[in-house]
Image (cartoon, rainbow, N blue to C red; front, top):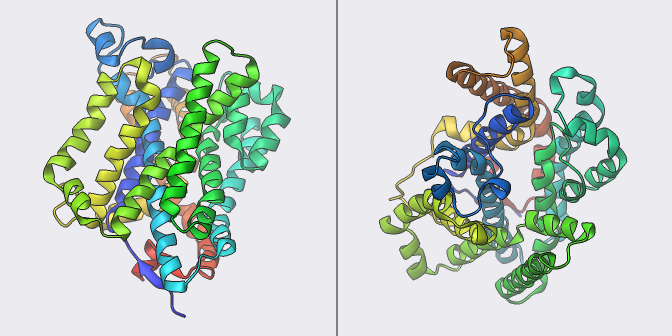
Amino acid sequence: MSATRVYFPGLNGLRFFAAFAVIVTHVELMKKYLGFNNNWYDPGRTITSYPLRHILDGDINWLNPLVAEAGPLGVIFFFVLSGFLITYLLYVERENVGHISVKNFYLRRIFRIWPLYYFLFILGFFVLPNFDFFYVPGQTEELQVNFWGNFWTYLAIFPNLGYSMFQAVPNIGQSWSIGVEEQFYLIWPLLIRFFKKPLHAILWVTGVLLAVKAGVVITTRFYSPEWMLVLKKFLAMSKIECMAIGALGAWLLYYKKERILALMRSTTAQIMSFVGIIALLYLTPAMVQDGAHLVFGVCFLIIILNVSTNPKSLLKLEYKLFDTLGKISYGIYMYHLMVVVFTIHFYKWAMGKENVFTFTDGLLVYVIATVLTIGVSWLSYTYFEHRFIRMKSKFSRVLSGDEAKK
């Protein structure tokens, strides 16, 4: 049986911009860790009302909220996109093949995710800590203290649990989101295969998770032992509800709910999604910021549906450059943090800088870190990851992305 092909144009471009957003936040965060002037701040500690109020009061500048939240927003986007693509492809497989092979689904995810994840795992735990150019104050010392606790959680692909219990592992801390993705992959095909109405099952699971999250948040206001705070942080990272938003979009598209889709594809909805993202960054009060990701998720879903399925989309990203950059976006996400840390250390050493970067210095750091990350990611994709991607296609009854274009 020949494989069915499913291709959504423009998504590679969106992937790249989401990965670049994470680079922006981590450049500023690593500048902070390494003692340089920066545009990063901790929203949980600094903001007590909403960002605009603190900007007007002169506590922070206009750039801070955008820089601090760009990375988290990029991760939310990836979660929504995963929910959308995985759910749609599983629907197609169930219809065209007659059933969903859970084993093949897991094998496809293993071949795509595990090789690079475990390569970074080895680098982060055993190689990079031996070099001064990859030293991150605080995080490196914390890794030495809690080495084995972090080691076992990362080895089991539960880096989000390790991050909840300890500090981020230097240079590979961003891999916490890979743990969330893997836990999502573990349950999603089961929901769609074994339930007659998988959307109902998805919504029930999401509703229960949100109820548990709300209960933990409320409980920690009155009772907050260390284990409860760890659970709160772990649940905050596990944004399965963002995947559910993407899954809802897949359901709308697959079952051709044209009235709703027409509304989401309207020019008004597109403009509101872009404006809404910026407005939420500056106008969301601290007391409801824990739920803002749900609205961000809806905005991202509108953008995804328009870019990939609407000929009249205001944003068009189906270009060769964006396609290439999006194709290596997994590598960009995984390699960028170590490249950023190396770049700042190297620039400090080469230029004799102490604790201050001028505007030109900061711009050069961004350019060097981004170019190096893209270069390393391209080499990794071409000579390492692609070998496993070819193996992955052997277990695919539905080809997607670049495989579907061939």
